[in-house]
Length: 330
Image (cartoon, rainbow, N blue to C red; front, side, top):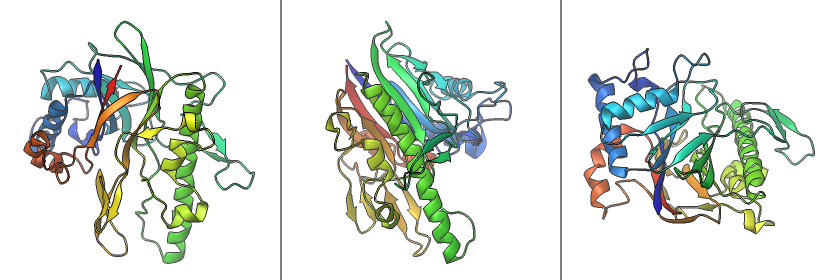
C-alpha cells in the first residue's frame, strides 16, 4: 500500500478562523480558505503536516486539531480528515497535522523517558567550544507515531518550524551581523535537538521522517561557512554513521540566477531587493522507508503536471509557500 505524505506551510492559518475557532467562510479569508482547500483536496494526502496552523490555547478552550477538523469538514467535506496537535507554542503559529483515519492511526507520542520533551529547555554546544548553551524551541516540534489502522507501527514523524534566519527589525550593519549570528546559532540548536531525537528512534530500529519549514536549504552560505555547519545537514545526520543518515525526498537543488530549483518559497533580499527562490520546506526520511515521487507542488516548475497547472492560481494565492509531497510504500 502506498501512502501520500505531505507537508504544507499554510501561512498564518489562524487568520482563517473567527475568534471562537469556527472557520471564516466569507470575504478574503474565506476565499483563501477555499483556495487552500482546493490545493489540499487535489493533493489528496493521507497525512499532511501543517506549519503555521491555527492557535491552540493553553487552557485547551481552542485547539489546532479541533479547528482543522471543523475547517476540513466545511471546505473539504468529501474527505473525513482528523486533526492532531501537540504542545502549544509561545506564539501564534501552531504545528499540527491532518490525516485519514481509514488509512492511518496517528498518535501524539512525545519522548519523556531518557530525554527532554520538546517543550522543555535543552543544552547543546553550538560553537564547538565544549561549552553547552541553553536553548528552547519557540514552537515545540510535533512528535507523532504513524501506525496502520490495526496498530502496526510505520514510522515516527517530527513536524518542525525552526528558527527563521530573517531579521525584521530596523538595525545598523553591526547589529545586523550580531543578530544574524545569534539567529543562526538558535537555528542550529533547534536542529541539533531534533537530530538527537532522530538518533534515539533510529538506534531503536524505528523509522523516522522530519518534515516542515526548516528555514534552511542544502548549501553553505556565509554564516554556515563561518560556523562550519548548516541546519539541514545537521538534520540529515553524521557521515560517520551513514546508516543513520536521513535522505531528502526531493532531488538535489540547483543554484541559478533566481535562486534554487526546486524551490518551495521565496524571500526578498534585504540588500538587493531581489526575490530569491529558496528550498526551505523539506521532508527527510530514514533509509528504511521506501519513498518515491517526491515533488514540490510549484506551478512554475511542474509545467507538465496538469493537476498542478490547473491549481496555479490557488497555489500562488493560498500561501507564501508551496507544499511538498511524497509517496511511501508500506
